[in-house]
Length: 33
Image (cartoon, rainbow, N blue to C red; front, side, top):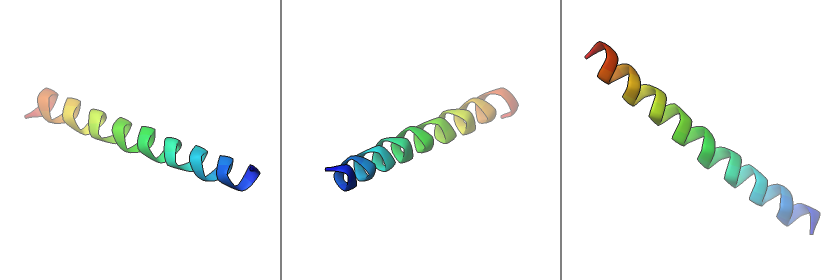
């Protein structure tokens, strides 16, 4: 249970992290491009 939960949490955090990085990159391109 705990192992599955930690995997799910890592997956969610990873997805959110990637989304945040892509959003920041996109904003930077729009702002400076």
